[in-house]
View 1: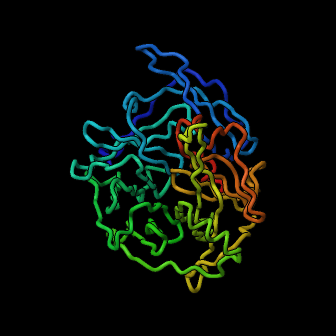
View 2: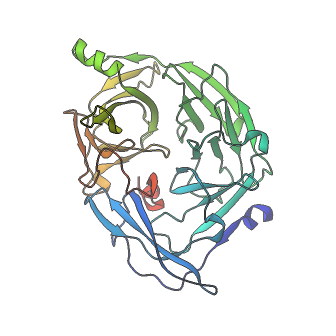
Length: 366
């Protein structure tokens, strides 16, 4: 217990300035930029974040806060439950922080054990997933994908090292990790979405696999299917506040522009379509739907999450808010895709941290 709490550092700040929002619960946000306000040896580096609020589609500023010294210059690994993970490259330890939570003025940093150099991340396209937003819970687990064929699990309150679990069937490449409160398991998908893996951290990291069966496929013209076959596709799993599980296919298409000589000036991607499938409670099959009620889904390089739009005035029900090749919204009922206005050339270059950040107040309210 003492070992765990010694890993958490609370960083003081001299004063609060701009509040993110005055009402609760706080909506999700994007960190567009981190701006230095001042810095002294005594006080440290004081910053605030320029944020994008999807409920108003405007830019706002967070509270000012002290930037943790141990995070400076460290690469991002992923985000989940309002926390962002950094990698300390010199010893491969992982730091979790709530620095980017807009309501936090005194960020915490939780230092997790070293990965071990044999498990050094092979790419920065890693994923991190938390079982809870509260790190002091006894059943607080961290799962991560640091390379192609392992899920790594750590229980910070008691573990002095990571447990690296080899996954069968080459399931992990391009998969997306998520935590199910209903199942008390970390779920992930295979490369083409053919299988779903489930890891149960409270049951000695038991891992099970099942085929993903899709039903009621959308009736769309053959030409559209042919177009989708030319797209890149990623698969995502997300759980609603009531415990419904959704499987999502995200199709993106490469676009390029040529100059007068036929040379490429730039290449980027744009979202073409989403397909959402709801899991049937009895058969466990996933059935295609264009109606998820008052829910809205948030997709980015962070763990996907799902909220009730009625709790956050300004969020659109039955919509997907995405950050990937572009930043925008997708209306599931009409299939309308709308990039946000400041997104130029299909690349969200203004986004400093490529994650939707979920405030802890969202978690307690949804």
